View 1 (cartoon, one colour):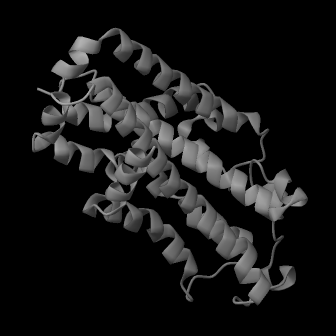
View 2 (spheres, rainbow, N blue to C red):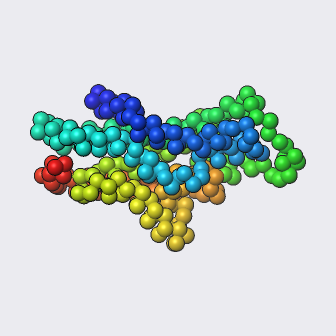
View 3 (cartoon, rainbow, N blue to C red):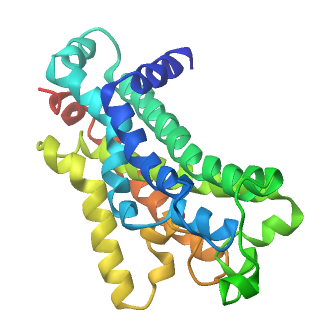
Length: 263
């Protein structure tokens, strides 16, 4: 476990991780600017965690850990390691480190805007929000925005934790698909873009069938969508978990090709 945590810390020190955090923080920074107009805290939170950048999340998830790992691969460190330790154990360690690192990043992307816009900002009255009459419309309540929001009625901390965990799991599972694909195909580029291809293809198919709330897209953009049952969030997570498990079974049955893949 110590080796896994060391790998996680190293990934956070890489330039790729910094680039990914800058991209992920950009909607939050925009929603935090003083010139940004919003009728209520929930609208600011929605804009901070949603938007067109969501479609780039699969690529950003690969930057956090897989990009630094590929640098080790390119410089021959992975090949050297394969001659010194049990390679399948090494891959499991890197797989766990990737999942943990990406989970932390995407959990923070969900938790920090929620804490700031839904708790700190209203509590300290940092923003002078208009009344409903001044706004000229109805200021939507928390429960009208999306999934898991009923948890807010129980405890804001519970809702924020659930939101962060679901966001972190989605990012971690998508990046895990890409990480394991590195050992299933010869093309590293194809492995890197596999999460994005999966993300886009699943969205096209599901949107065409009217199953849009079950897409990986809305697994990230879970706040700001039409009210829906919480199980619509469980389905995409379960689907990703099944894909990762299937990849793991294939790799387990192909131990020799696993080592050969790094050549």
